[in-house]
Image (cartoon, rainbow over all chains, first blue to last red; front, side):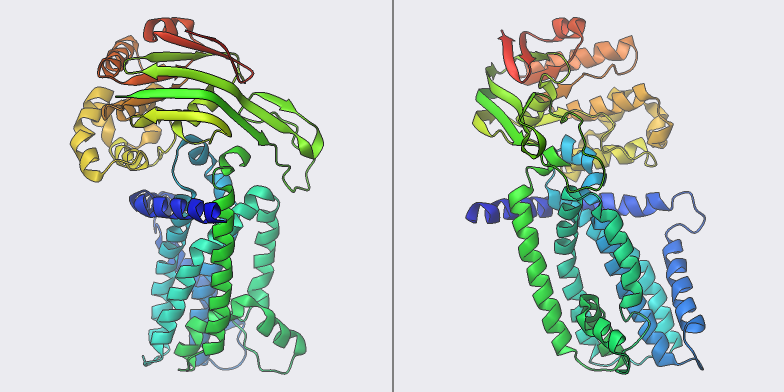
Length: 262
Length: 233
């Protein structure tokens, strides 16, 4: 067990020492993906606005409710980040096969490269979210500190989630399609744009048994309700610790074998 | 002092059957070697008791048929694969030139690619800045250095890769199927640089099928067959 922990730590420390590599590559990735376009990465902002407007103006019945717009705006911001993190992680080591077989870079370099890519993408969506919050006339309160903590917790969980799903993709290649489909369904099964009024038992079950609910809640509730979602924080901390334990185990056990398997 | 001491190196691993809904992948593993067992219990012996010693100034040519274990041995020396048995004592900083296009971004300029490749190689930004002009000069890319890499011919890309890989005077340089980089004059420059590296107490390990190149470049030869040493000297 100590050897596994030591292997994982060696990889993680190596990844930190090579941070210039993943910062440079993640930045290149974002601009490469939009290099030929007129708007460039601003397409990420357009994409966010398109979804937000659809859910705010088309899927919400009745007159426009600024509080509901904030609910959807923040919910979509967090959901897009979670969705990108999970779906892209599954094929991560396969995409990085050339590097894994041709360099001695630690696996955590690739994990952090994807994490940073997703963070940069979310930065554009965040700009859109801020616009929605301003238009909705939101007032900043002390409770927003909880929201900032929620964002921090999601960021802490991200590398572990990426690593776990990346290993899943190595051992079970079909998982990238299974996970992509599950995440498409999960968007509707997660309270991104709907709330739980308590009347529908199916909706209530989806609300409480869906782990994504709690990651949305720790960022959204302080802004929308001005409250501190302590129980949601508790669930998220447990999930984060579990994911880090699993990621450490996988990294420590398989990090040198990935080059032979991928 | 730079040296490589490999004693009774083995690389054995189990072929992991991936959980998949497709028909089973029957291709040979990419490490070459020999396969034993069947079904879910297939084992690959990629290297089987490989021993050799190299000292400063040695230029070793690795030869053998496809799948003999040349690339696998290079990757073990570089640290990508971990030997499952035996001992490997390497003294000196190891650099490798396996896939010449690895890490090069088609949309980025040659200059930007020097920075990226340098970072991947573990160089500091100061080291990269210090050597950039020398790399550009040696690669003979001229004004193309500020053009996207995708506009380069294969030879231009190979010249840039070789220039970057050899610019920091690696103490030990591993090369797989050495690039036919550029025209005859560049080949001569590249060979001269390799000779200088070896003279400066470096070690070069070069895997190639070209007898002419090996005869011109190397002073030692290791022949592999199915992961075993067939001849060394």
